[in-house]
Structures are given as structure tokens and as C-alpha cells.
Image 1 (cartoon, rainbow, N blue to C red):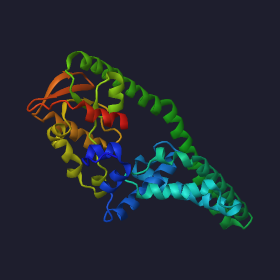
Image 2: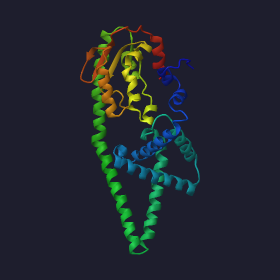
Image 3: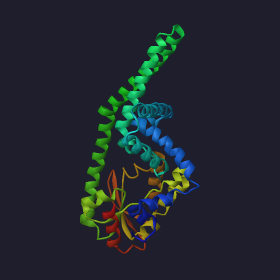
Image 4: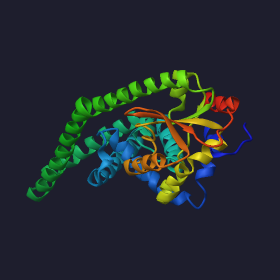
Length: 314
């Protein structure tokens, strides 16, 4: 293992070390609490696209997740604990203490079991409704209310997924294609007009594959998000010049899609404003979606071996 313990080296080479760096015993309760909300949202969004993106949707996602989990437990009680059930228990336990809020991508390995749980709970609820229907008018009113609520959720889910299939996801794909086209033009310019210096690039593996040049990214530490410390989130970007010097970086590539996995829209806008006002960054290439900056003072000496190791390790 690498004995270098700066943030970038730990991020690229030591997942457990990065976990220890971001989650202390003091942080563990709030991490578990917020990750639990992430698990609920992730379960629901496997069924209904982007359900938890609004406050009302978040409440609905919690309800739907509880129903799915109850069905999964009921399935285990009816048919016994399978290897899949044990895997789900241990895997979810890891997600609850991990340093990144789980989303539907993290819950995808459990999708088949969760779907079986949803079916089991729906079948159980159908049996409850049939029993209530035979119990007189008051019970029938309750049964109708339950069926109406289920129908509304089902129609809403189908409409959301259809809209996502034909509008949302194609729109996301087109955005990525536009950014990639812009980036490829920037990659070509970099190959022709920059000397052999190390680069900062958010998607550094893609950068390396297109240019053959070594790059490192600035990890966005998750700890400030759990503590809801906005200034701590933005602080590394205010010190971009120091980061570049520490990592022996001579150029920085910024694109419109940077930090889409790590920062909310408000913080992404603030990061762009901070970097635009950084006097140590001199623009040498600019397009609508991609820009290249050079370090203007005390330009770092290239250290290709160090960044090459990180790129390959990633």
C-alpha cells in the first residue's frame, strides 16, 4: 500500500482509509441516520424514477420503502431466510455506516429481493382487503380508501416511469453527449497545445483514455455534507491553487458536468463562481461547456509517475 496519506492518495488507493478519514465515532450516529434515509429513497427510486427529489416525494418514498421492507421480512418468515436475505442484511449494514449516502445505484444488487417483497406485501394487503370487504360497511369504506391510495400510487409511478423513459433519460443522455462532444474538442486542443504537465480533471479516467495524459481529481469529501457545513464543502475549491501545487498539477480542465455526482446545484454554481474569480488560474482554452486553465505563478514541475499511479489505480 502507498504510505502517502494526502487526501488524493487515500481516495485513489485506500477505500477503508478514506472511510476512516471521513467517518469518526462522533459522526457515526448522524451518518447512519442520513444513510437510512438514503436507503429508503434508493429502494423507492428503484420502483418510481426520481421519486425522492421533492419533499412530498421523500415522504412517499419512505412509506413505499417500509412496505417493501415489510414484504421482504414477511417473505423470509413464510419461506425461511435464504442466502439472498443474509446478503441483503449484511450489505445494508455496510451501506448504513459507509461514507457516501446510498442511492438507487447502491440498492440495485437487492432489486430482485425487494421486488419479491413488494409482491408479497401487496398479496397480503389484497387478502386483508378481501377480509375487510366481508365485514360490513365501515370496513368496506376503509378498504375502498386503501385501494384508492394504492391505485393513485400505482398510476403516479407508471406515469413517472413513462415520462422518464421517453423524456427524462433521453434528455440526460443528450446532455452527456453534448458535454462529451465539447470535451473531445478540448482533449484535441490539449494534445496539440499544452506541454507534458499533469492535469486536474473531474473525470480523470475519461481524460486519460482520450488524451493519454495523466490527471488527478479533487475528491469531494462527504463528511461536511453529513455535518451540513457548507463552508467546509466549498473550502477545498477556494484553495485550488494550493491543491494544484501539492499534486504537481500544471493545468486544470473544467467542464459543465463537473461534480454532478457530488454537489447539489447550488454548490456547483458557487464552485464555478469561486473558480472564475481565482486569479491564479489563467484561461488558455474556452468553449461553451469546457475550459482549460494554466497555473499562472510558481508553475508546478510535472511529476508524471505520481499521477500515473493514481490514474491506473482508480
